[in-house]
Image (cartoon, rainbow, N blue to C red; front, side, top):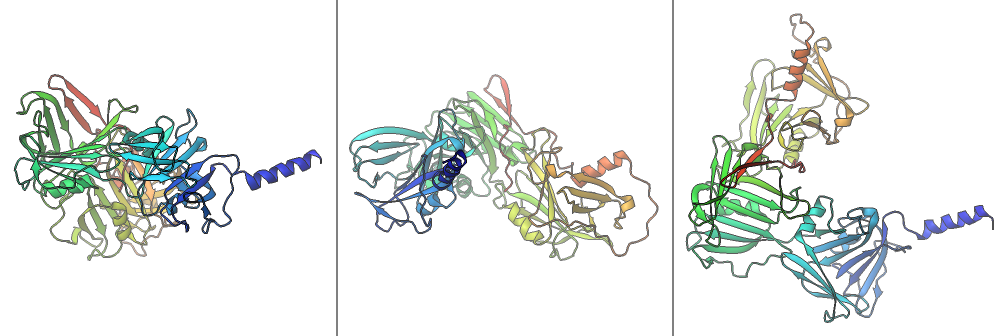
Length: 582
């Protein structure tokens, strides 16, 4: 055998036997001989060789002494994703905890993952298929994983603990102690306690506390009861702290929500407190400390002061929130004992009208008087409180021969709303961010029809056309009149480097719809004669750029949160948290 033949044989062996990068051996353990989902658990390991099933979707079920297994060769990615859906399909219908481990010093790097295991999120005993080992989870604010050297969870072999902090950090694609973890299926509910001043718990609460653990630990009896002090409480289990707060406080009892995170990216809230913001002094749960919170709707600010006594006398902290911190709810970094430091978010509710927690205020501009055909422009803002109109109305925005019309709404899911309005019309999204925040704090945005036709810009009364160049860049032209003459156009290009890449350009981010944007300009068939105009100056060009992508909606400063310990004024601002565009 010559050297060339040797390399051919080795290459063939590697191709047939060894996995590609990221390929791992999965072992799924079942209780029944049909190997039907949901499985008992899933184990994934790295090994030199990996033997795939002949048919991934009709695998061979192998009998063991105490159970049944299906082994396969998969390309696994962190977070429970694999190329044939082994994890997803075998644990369908149950909640589970995934724990991924890595080589020392390589935590979170997929190529260096050594193993992963998906545990059902309950406290039952699960044996391996051979009957030689087992495991059990103990669930509370943390998850303790105990392994045993027998099949009945009797003889302890090892214990390890997964803290909620690891779950949050992993969601931001970081790791802790060379480990990542995640929830699969339906995540566990919050344990909630509503605190009341009245013995029937029929009025609005003074405070609601939410804590996120690996299971809800509320007692079975969720009736109103004394908390042992001066308050009454209703415990429970809920999936959403925003929905529950809105339900208990109602639309006309103001409240302030403070979310606490053990990471600076505000991933997975561990503790949330909703405070009554009626301006009165309220005792905290426990009865030894107190707080006072208020919201000023006129200037979109809020204040919450904490006290070391029960009568709001001795200040321990004083936090003042501006409108941007409340409406955009950015992630605010602060120092704590967590390895990565911590994050905090603020929001408000109960300010009258229908619930508007997290809603955008939207103005949709149409060319038809029924507001029924695809719009030409849509502007959204993020107010502290969005009050919807009492009834849907199509109103004239600009009259005359080129009249346009508008509707106003409060919107939960902006992406779905935009798609439903523009439908088959392509569009350009321009998101405007607070100055100096590196496109992290979304203030507002404008969405333009990008069909190559001449449309009125409702922002300033000029006209525009938008097309896409062959290289993916976006060409925007602004005109002074409805004739949209090329000789009068002010043209500017958004380079493809900044389109659909989430790259920040001048406090703006540019995105397009899923359908292709027009590649040619369609000017009106007829036009009204207009006076001769001169070429626009540099100042005029800059002015049109700012009105086309509205600068009047920007906030000149990032959100501010002023904190005081009662003696010294302090300040912390936003962290480089992730942007959200629902």
